[in-house]
Length: 142
Image (cartoon, rainbow, N blue to C red; front, side, top):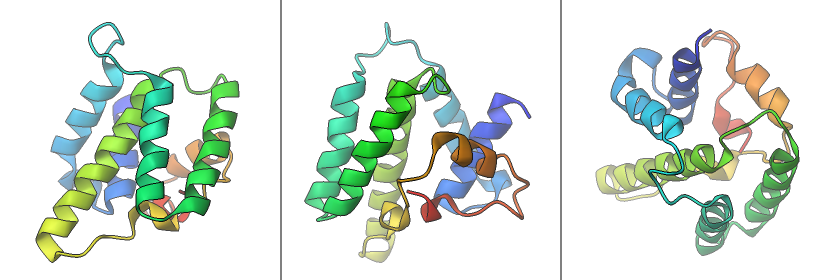
């Protein structure tokens, strides 16, 4: 499966929409993930801090701690090469989905509250690569 297909599956799972309905978001995600750090001033630790701060503001302290542990293990891993942009992508995608949901329903979506951040990055990649009908919702892991 190509990297675009992988990104499409990831976006589809995060947004809980079928792959054919997330074309615009997939294009945006692919562009964001392929950006060089020379063009954007993205710092991995500042993005990580933003994510933790968002969880803390939402009173999700346990999830913030789990995220910190997962981020620490990902930093040691050689699986993910573009961590800054991946973290920024997830932060932006989560935030934009939250704002959209709030404006549509005037209530916040559970989103990342259901994730189990203790998951091994390799397991997450394997689960995402499963066929769409058998793949679990990413909200089960973060």
